[in-house]
Image (cartoon, rainbow, N blue to C red; front, side):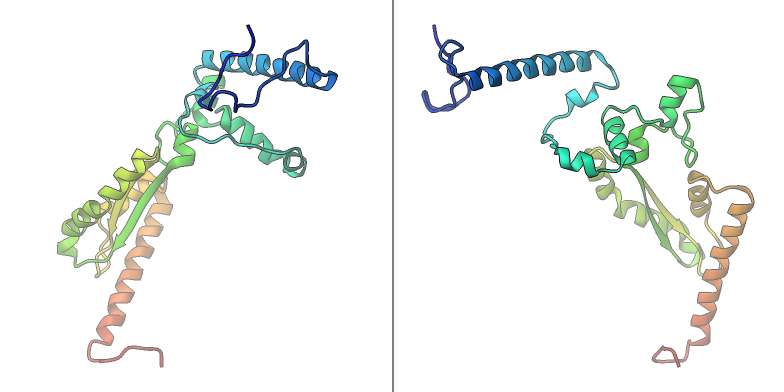
Length: 223
């Protein structure tokens, strides 16, 4: 019957694979290699489809092929190559994987959320510090929360995990609860938290004192 038209090219303009009977020795070798490659790729894809976690790359849409040459592989650090392969198949020892394999704690050591690979690689905080008049802490918090809501929504649409954290330290050195919540969220507790809160309060207080001392000066600058 002969070849059947494949693809969207105009009839007769595509690259035709020669028939086995009319192929040269070199063309036959190429045909055998391509057929073996096709079968291996089909088997690999079939296995990947059956794997709930390692096969998730099969569901990636709009992703270009990633080509790595032999020279790049040869010159690549072994730990980087290991990361690329294991990250692609989501088999890095993340807390959630260690929990699945060994029963270890799956919580993120920084924020206590389930720490899978996505949480580690694409989760981030948007933090902005305001030093307001203490009575305006709540107003400053809501204003900054609203300012970054659109940015956070756009980032989440692209697959990022986003937490917006406006924090306030009053201009007279009183630290708002929003700042303490952020410190807890990133795993800063106990003595370390108390020390950092003290440092934040002192920095705000000293800055305000500096402003007070120069309240009658028209121009500021180092002397």
